[in-house]
Amino acid sequence: MDVKNHGFNLAVMGLSLVTVSYLVFPLTAIFIFIASTSIPSSLGRPEIINAFLLSASTATVSTTLLLVFGIPVGYLLARFRHIPGVSILRLLVFLPLVLPPLASGALLLGALGPISPIMRMFPMIDLTQSVTGIIIAQTYVASPFMIFAAEIAFESYDESLERVSRLLGKSRFQTFVHVSIPLAKNGIIIGSIMSWVRAVGELGATMMLAYNPHTISIQIFEDNAIGGLARAIPDIFLSIILSITALTIFWLYSAKFTKGSFAMMK
Amino acid sequence: MTGLELVNVIKKFPGFTLGPINLKVEPEVRVVIGPTGSGKTTILNLISGLLRPDMGSILLNDVNITNQPLEIRKIGYLFQKPFLFPHLRVYDNIIFGKRKDESIGDSEIMALLKDLGIWRLCDRKIEGLSGGEMQKISLARMLVTKPKVILMDEPLSNLDELSKRNLRRELRMVLKERNIPTIYVTHFEHDVYALADTISILYDGRLVYSDTLDGCLKVQKPSSVPYYFDFFGAEGNFIEGIVMQSGSGIAKFRYGAQTIEILGEYPVGSKVGILIRPEDIILSKQALKTSARNVLLVKIVDIKKPAESIGTIKVYMMLEKRLCLVAKITEEARLEIGIRIGDELFIIFKASAPTIVREEFLN
Image (cartoon, rainbow over all chains, first blue to last red):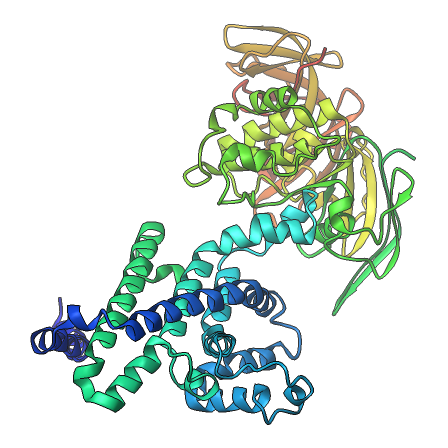
């Protein structure tokens, strides 16, 4: 190995070590939390359990909605990318990812809240302060994860396979079901996990549109506001376990099918 | 008519126009040849429905299919790549296009897989199969749909020589058995001799020549047809005949009054086609007794010095008053032997010199 390459490798390893340390170091706080609080007894608080179950269930509904409505958008972006206007569509779809979550929530509240001209026409429907509102907010902020994962997945295989399917007598819909979806399956599963995790962790938009009932993130926010970090630690502990579980599923699935951590997204 | 018909089909691209194409393909193997960029694949894509013509009609058994969606045309298309579905096992790939109503039965599928020698692969995953196996699976998958027309776009081009040779023989067999109108696009001379019943030349977007394989090999060459001389005789001389004797690793077949010996054993009565490279032919004024097994009497019909050749000339000869053969010799050799147009002389080549490009077992 020549001296220049040796130096380069050392630099890459050194900088990576700094970054990884920066990312891992906060996890040591878990031990501080465990030492300072009686987590098992606090976890029995009904509002924490309710918030935890609410987050998990609404995130599941949001992810299911994204599977139905997000995958076709990913397919459209992948297959019709050369059509004028599709790049603008991609920017619009990307918007929830770059908007501050509170701003997303404010937009949703404006469009779907009591001041919205459309909702004034249907006064009997209240989308704010409801489970429906939570699902709407979660779906909104998580949608780019599903759509872009699906787009990459549909781009990852040779489009000619779909043409071959049609030449073999399958309709467009049959081809989508029997060829496109199975071939994009890995990417779609990864997109689902990422969307679910994003939905569970969602705070800003939900806070604006549907503060009540409390999701786990809002519960953390409120417990911290009322009783400081000590009161919020059980909620935080639960949400960390939830996130690590989701990340583990993601990693196991990825490792099983691609022999590489996140390679299946490519 | 039974078969496929293209009537005044035109397709325009920036800087290139295909057509107007008028073509009739009956139940036969029509090989379309032409230089790169002449529009061969475009014709197949128009017929299959992957492209729509700007003008003209495409008729299949007298039904206008020009604007039909591709999934209902019942056209089988074999590409350069096999395009197997990686998420399905071999058998599931093969029956992918099987229709409940009118596709072939399970026993027929198994017979097809045995014919192609792939029935042992049924439970295998696509990953790890050889190129030849994949292309055979792709062929079987297409045949299971019982297509009304078969299109092939250089399906052998990505295979090794041995796989090519095997697949050519199997292709010829399954195509002759089914007797479906077939268009085979290629620019490989071996494919033409192995598969063609008729040949069309596509040049710069236009069909400039069509004839049977025999017609293409006739002595009177159409000198005005572009690409003709670039193609025929470039790789070799094609001779076809019926095997009359076979044994001890040598087969003899007859062409007119002459007997040709080749290496290999073939069933008596079967038809074989061989290809002899122009460089492998020795010209002699006498019927020399040498170790070479083939000494054939021919008549010189033309002598040309190709512009691109360095030191060699092409001698065109007539075998049995109809088949045109070409030999490549040096100008010096021609002068020493004293070869002139109209001379009768002998061509000599070894039994091991020809490549077997066509085998048909006649019933």
